[in-house]
Length: 174
Image: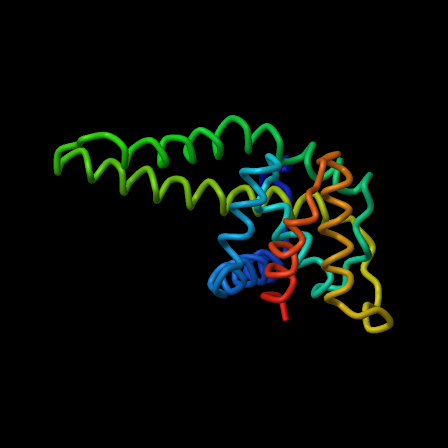
């Protein structure tokens, strides 16, 4: 076995992917994530991690935790995911042939794979976090607390009108 390989619990990875897909399939949740991502330059996968972590009994994420997580994922996010997102956003605006349309679908597929890899990297960032019994505190309040820790860590000037988007995301977790 490769000594440099990090072992991530496949059950956790699968759980995170399924949670992310389920949350994004709830009406309005994915749009809220994307809207917050665009407006505040957030990473929607970190938003999803903030939502998923309490359901896995991870302790509340603090600002320092968010900074560590961002440090783990930032190179991949900036050098791969953002470029693929930009490519996928530009492609539909171009007048392209049927053959080039296949390249668009390939770019979309690569973007989805890049985001799955990013989620794996995010899990590496939280693997050493302490697990606690979250039954004492309602899980959805921890989700909300984690999202606000992320917003504070990013030092965004959060507008109160965007609280509804955060509420949609938290409600989709229920």
